[in-house]
Length: 158
Image (cartoon, rainbow, N blue to C red):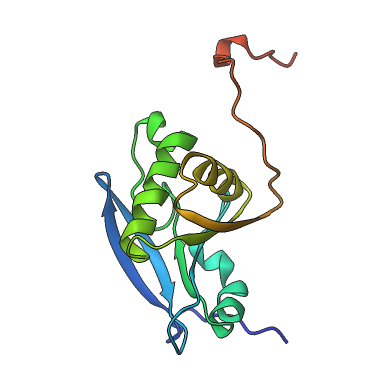
C-alpha cells in the first residue's frame, strides 16, 4: 500500500506566511538531509494542500523539501472578497513571493493540479528566473489571450 500522510503526521509541519496582505497556510516537509530542491505543490478546485498526502512522502523520501499551501480561498489561507485577488496574475505573484520566503530566493520546482496547474504555468511564464522545473497534472499549457473578453460577451446557454 502506498505511503500517505496522516492528519497529525510528524513528517510535516504547518506554517503561515503573510504574502501581499494575505495569509497563506502551508504544509512543509523537509528531507533527512540537505534538500535537492524545493517543490511547491499547488492543489486544484475544490481541494486542500492535504490532497497531496500521497505525493509528499514519496517526494520527501527522494530528498526534496516540499511546500504545499492551501490556495487562496481554501483551508486556513485568506479568502479575499475582491475577485481580482483570484486572477492568475495576482495568484502567480503570491506564489512567487511565497517561494522567496520558503526557498530563500533559490530556484524552485513547481507542480500543480487542476486550477493549481494553471497557476504553475503562468508563474513559470511570468517569473522564469524563479523556476527550475515544472510538472502539471491534468492541466495543459494555455497561453494568455491577447484579446480581453468580458463575461457579457460570452455566449449564454439557452
